[in-house]
Length: 76
Image (cartoon, rainbow, N blue to C red):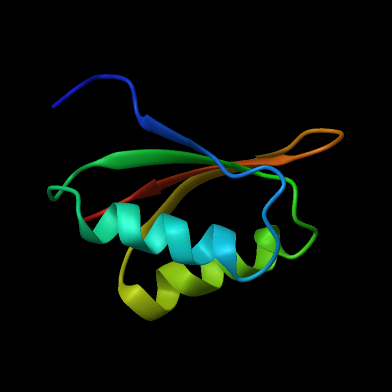
């Protein structure tokens, strides 16, 4: 497994696509995989953590920049 997380740049996509793409990437990954998601949809800070709770994934870190959200997700 790589030390760097896989990055999904989902800027420009609107709800619910960022959560759907993140869920698909996590579902296809090996346990322990970390994925960095970058999204600019205003609902992403709500939708992505909510998807993780529903699907059993972990939110490791979340940071808002001026124009986007960067969130680290892990498949346990």
